[in-house]
Every structure is written in C-alpha cells, then in structure tokens.
Image 1 (cartoon, rainbow, N blue to C red):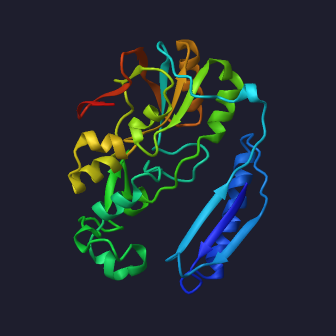
Image 2 (image 1 turned 30 degrees about the vertical axis):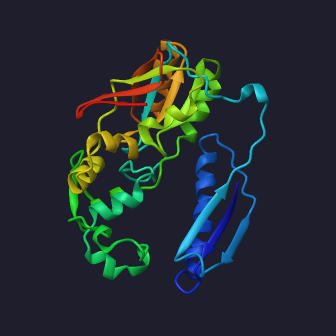
Image 3 (image 1 turned 180 degrees about the vertical axis):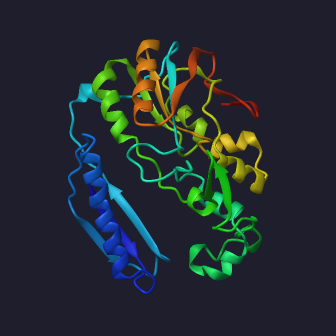
Length: 290
C-alpha cells in the first residue's frame, strides 16, 4: 500500500502530513490485529498549490493472488444478496459511523450545512460553483440528532470515515469463497452500481434492505432529493453487497458480519429477465432502474 499526497503548502502544513502518515500506520496495525496484512511501501508528497486547493490524498493498493481465486462478477439467477450496513459502530471502529461512505459527500455537505460556512471556510469549496448551490442547508456542524439513544453531532455523522469491510471479508472469503459470485460496493451509482457488472440479463430485486439510518433521512429532508434519486446517489444504509449461490452460505455470511457488530441480512435475490434492471422496494416506495 503506497500513498501519493498533493497539497497546497500555504494551507496544509507539515503537521497535517505527519498526522496522515501516522494514522496510515495506525490503520495498518489495526487491520493486522484482525488478520489483514497491509505492507506500507511509503509514498510521495508533492507541493502542487497551483492545482490543488487544499489537499488530495490517494492510495494505491497492489496484491498478487492465484487467478482462480479472483472473485469475478458472475451474478446469476438464483443468487441470494447479502447486504452489509454502512452505519453503526463495528468492533474495529472507535465511534458511531453515520454511513456516508464518501460517495455523495459533496452533495451532502452543501445540501445539509448552513451558508455561513462558505465565508468561514472559503477553501472548503470550488468558487466556480454557483453561489445558490454552496452550503444551502440549515444545519450547523455542532447541531445534534438522536441516534440509538445518544445525541450525535451532524458534522461528525456526515464526515464519518468510509467503513472498511476488510476484517469481515477476510473471514467471509476464507470460509465461503466458493459460494460467492460477486461483491459489489454501493458507491458510485449506489444501488444501481451492480448494473455495470452484469454479464447476462437479470433482474436484481432488493426488497428487504437494511434500515435507512438517520443521516440519509437528514440529507433527504434538507435537500428535497426524490427518493428514487437518493438510491442512485447514496448507499441509504447498505454499503456492501455479496451475491451468493446458496442460502446457507448467505446466512453464515450474515452471521460473520454481525459478529463484528456490522448489521447484515439477506436483502434480495437475482431472477432471470429479458433485460437487466434493479428493483428497489423500500419504505419510501418502489423504484426500477435499468
């Protein structure tokens, strides 16, 4: 694992870089405790203030494995879909995770937070963005909302780190590799992302999704984005999908995830179809994507 950091040195000092490097090592050590080996290969920090407003941190991961062990996207009729939650607090996280998952973050920041932050933090947004789209929400970073009996800051919920599933997947793959046809992150494209990885015409039916956590309810209420679009932009509480050939394996994968205190359940199934599509049946309505 190597990193490439581009920064504006006039805004991002050495202490920030030091903190990022230290926490990279801390993360690697934490993963090692759960049987996931990450070897840090160093990296590079470039002062590129002409092209980066504040800081850009990128990581490149390299691995070598047997070709027959690669999990390709062979989604087929009859598959069971296991969904793993983006929110909550796993045993390897230090606090509650709002479930943002990074995709849709720019939209969420500007739709949720108050316009006062445009003046207070002028380096936090692109000044070519139309002013009527910059921080147009009503929330302050320190506003609180109740989650599972605790009061949490909205700012921390939106900025929750993107959850890694590595410790869970280590056990899942070690025990159920032969039963897995595909693993899909609900990132770019959210619940429609799977459409990019289909090799045959099938209908992906998601009719038992995990609960939508408070964060996405806040985003919807602040932005007014239609629910059909919400499922195309945000994970809505379900971040990782595992497509399994048999129900017993699916149920055992659910149990593994829950042992890490990450909620999971069978969220749907795959059926044969004349044309590929995704059907989302949720508390907010039924939506079809193709």
